[in-house]
Image 1 (cartoon, helix red, strand yellow):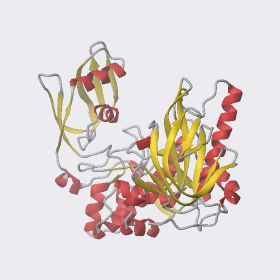
Image 2 (cartoon, rainbow, N blue to C red):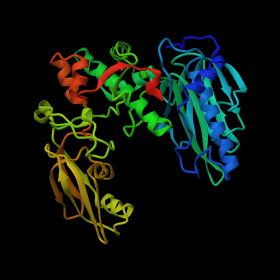
Image 3 (cartoon, one colour):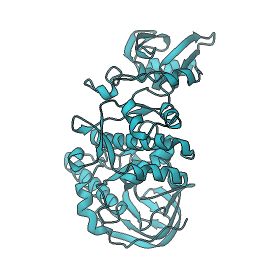
Image 4 (tube, one colour):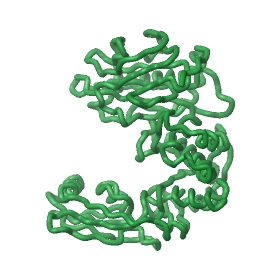
Length: 430
């Protein structure tokens, strides 16, 4: 689809973007972070430059004008391209290339080629910027193509360096909140079935709330992976998803006057988990204490996973337990059978920790294990139910409830009991 042109007045919105700034560029280690510097004065200057660059990208994403409702720009770190030395690029319509001071390096109409981590800095198509960080700001929506996927928004481009040498790219997309929610909805749920409209609306509210909460907690860009929220470009957008986002525009979940950490997951296996018990929140939070979802108990398909000996030994080494792992077992389970704490017993010592850590280290679907068997080759065979950490909204359960006729507010009330649904206001962003 051809990108719609918009007036190029976005520089007037820099002050607005500064007020809405979320991004701090400190999420990589010092050896790979293009914002890092060798001493405190240089580090402060680099941090200021990064914030200024992010503000410019925010302003470009908002096209320089305040949206009709409170809608901050969101920064999304595109992990699928992280560290790549080169990424195919296309831009439709007018565009600008800016440095961290907002100075226009170049502009034009239409652009194709590649983004490259050149030894001299970022290369955009044929343009050698001579800088390690720039912003590419298209004037239209759906105007940016990276590899085989289209995106809305402005792109912050950084060169990652190792020992001074260009090692790859770091790409951070800046776009309005509701565009981000649409990309998450299309990444997290099937959005082509009309009977799932209520589930899509519930998911949109949860994704909007969790994203804003996480931005406040982290003060940095959100990743486009399941570690944060799966985010997809505009090629994945559907009419049903657009309707779901529009119908819930600006709606968030609130508990005691603050944004609720509205976690969600794929399948709860019959009962959602208590966020505090799993260590997801520090204090008791009744909306995240866990609820029964009997439909998932009956429909949850069992899974089977094999964890190779090499991965088990790598986990032992990473935890400082010795060269190999002798055993892994549950120390505590919740009433639904979900493991809460596990013990890794290595060749030298043991480690007791949250079961969610075991799930992530072993890369298995859930912590609802029904069988564990050590094979002769040292691999671990696991069987279980459910998918994900189990906290908050259950996506399969929400879709089932939507098909049964529940509306989105009832679905949210079930999975986040006691939480208030209200419009996003400035006091929630502080």
